[in-house]
Length: 230
Ligand SMILES: NC(=O)c1ccc[n+]([C@@H]2O[C@H](COP(=O)([O-])OP(=O)(O)OC[C@H]3O[C@@H](n4cnc5c(N)ncnc54)[C@H](O)[C@@H]3O)[C@@H](O)[C@H]2O)c1
Image (cartoon, rainbow, N blue to C red; front, side, top):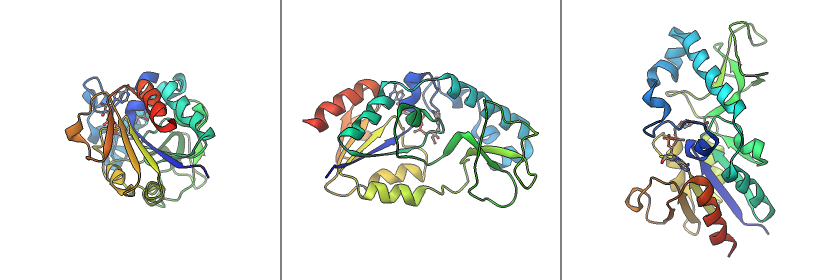
């Protein structure tokens, strides 16, 4: 039977595809305040600014391509039963060929209703722009399918179950600063082999049971594959 290999990815895995991370010195938060663009309050008070922010992010995602780290993860489906849990709102894992991708913080290629009922109904966005004229079936304006700060993370329980059954857990390209998602990595079972791939993380910053592969995502994936296939 194939072993269960779980990837927990963050913005760093898409950095080599040209998509900015949030917390690096050149990251997005250098140019925007969280409160201005990534909260329900911002949407309610400054809808057009928030909509434009995500339109620009979507345009960048559409123009980007999966890099070798995304692709290597997809190829590992030949050897393992692979689950990807991503904090990213881009769709580069799917476009690289990964079949089991769980988005914790939403998917920027989808929209949902901004109406009072938070139903799990998603509308694919054709192209990069969501406009004031895009409405749900009940007539409310569509908003990006992104989990904003202060909102529930509906996929959290599903993610927890996947990590609790992992044989190998690989945390790749995330600063583990955004909760509750970051807390998930502590749920790996005792016999699970755990790795971190990140060029900027030091040993003292990660739990002692994690192996630190201190590299960019693509180089780190090549190193990981040597270790887990041996
Ligand atoms: N691509 C996206 O969809 C995207 C982009 C930016 C932010 N976000 C959102 O931002 C939130 C922030 O959390 P986060 O931890 O994902 O991002 P983060 O910006 O907080 O952390 C990024 C991490 O990636 C590392 N990193 C930088 N370059 C790397 C590379 N080439 N290879 C591997 N690692 C690299 C950094 O050292 C850092 O630890 C998430 O919820 C996510 O939804 C998503």
